[in-house]
Length: 74
Image: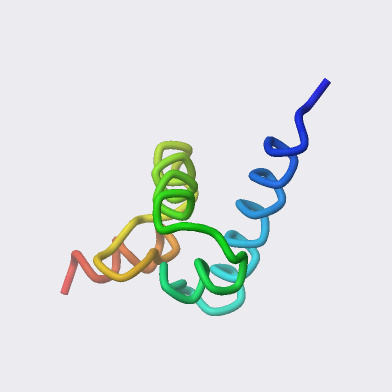
């Protein structure tokens, strides 16, 4: 059975991906305030999502993978 913390983590990660889909970019500070969690929790979420190929981390947050590859080409 899934723990409460694990469910919260999955919900948070799904919301991060939804926000990315809407805006193309998310900021760590905004996410921290939105979810009322520590920098470390947001950092770990982003590391996990990046390893899954779902986002690309940048200095202040993350961008969608396609947007990152376009930045690299410029």
